[in-house]
Length: 194
Figure 1 (cartoon, rainbow, N blue to C red):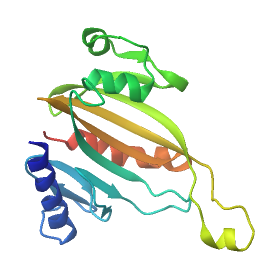
Figure 2 (cartoon, rainbow, N blue to C red):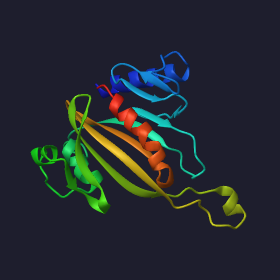
Figure 3 (cartoon, rainbow, N blue to C red):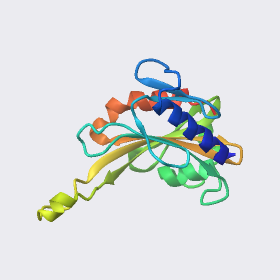
Figure 4 (cartoon, rainbow, N blue to C red):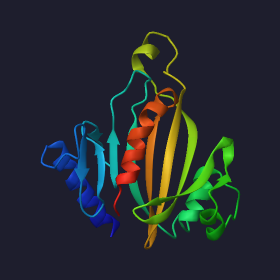
């Protein structure tokens, strides 16, 4: 099923980039079947399983990204809850009822896992931070430090349980740009129809 979904998503992204999909409003485009959503119209599509879009760099050295991927249960992650615990650093064994039954539970580094509704489904939401470092060949050749970083990057992740797996939706941006990007990430998440 996820392969079929990925093909439809890729076809929809190509349609958006070719201008054949209907615009939700100025600056946004709609993707359809089987994973409906709205995305920033001018963001570029990257090759990936699922959906991966990259926006323009604001000068921070890190381009913002929106992504969606389907993960089958039973591989590295036994369930959506297992993924949330491992990816967010939530305490071990919170249990499905406990995690979905409360508004928030503490996770690592000040992050919290909360319950949200995506496409009518009880889902999980959390933020994480990491550092992005990119090698730059010109500075290395000139004898300068060989990177542009580290750049603090914040990720807003929503995990949507589904049959035989779960969807991971993510918006990522440089820490200094994150608040400005948040409305676009929120609109993407709110528009998802699985």
